[in-house]
Amino acid sequence: METAIEIGLIITSIALIASVILQSKGAGLGGLTGADSGTVFSARRGIERTLFYVTIGLSVLFFILAILAILIYRF
Image (cartoon, rainbow, N blue to C red; front, side):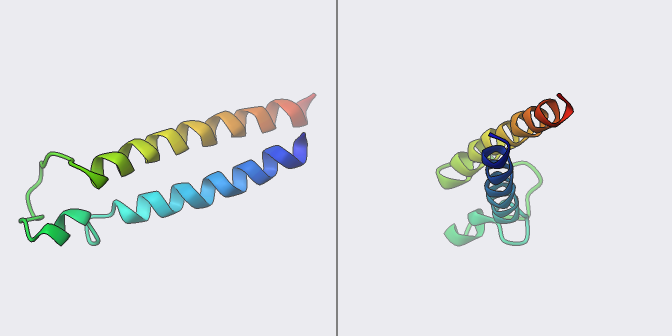
């Protein structure tokens, strides 16, 4: 059980890092469409919205796994 949680934490953290890097302003996916990506507020559409929700899901999963790891190692 402990090994499965550790492996889950590693995989989740790598996926979370990748999704955050893909969302960075310098490599924004909105720049692929030719639209002005320099605006402060813009609506997320298509792949950007999906990536946003995936990042939220991965972060929630990461925190749940981290709390489980703390509880398992403590007791």
